[in-house]
Image (tube, rainbow, N blue to C red; front, side, top):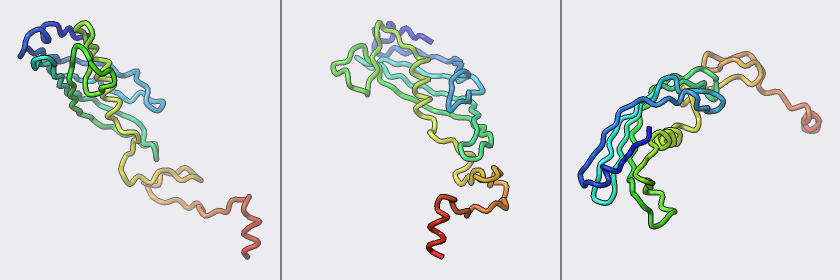
Length: 164
């Protein structure tokens, strides 16, 4: 959604509200497309004498396999984001402000970046997920397996003979 903010920046106290759905279903995360519902985006932009305050709330359903045991994780995320919008920047390296060129703001691009930066870097079904057995592949959250996990690396077998 491309916001035209000319009216907002021109009048102190002016505000603009938005409420729409954004499609992120084709977004790839770790080889999966986890956005299973459209992202609901609601918010306002309000002029504060020289700058505008953008407040956004997003919510969406998310489904991705656990990074340890591959069990599917289904979760609903809700995030809030806030940005200060300005028409020009004096210091180009200032990350606290977002420059709005020609009074236009690509809200989809900004919201997508906010969401991707807020998502966790590792997806776990639970904090104490035990993962999969490296020998047989059994999900260790469902119980232990009978595999011998203390096998000696064949390359080190000669060293074990020295110890014995």
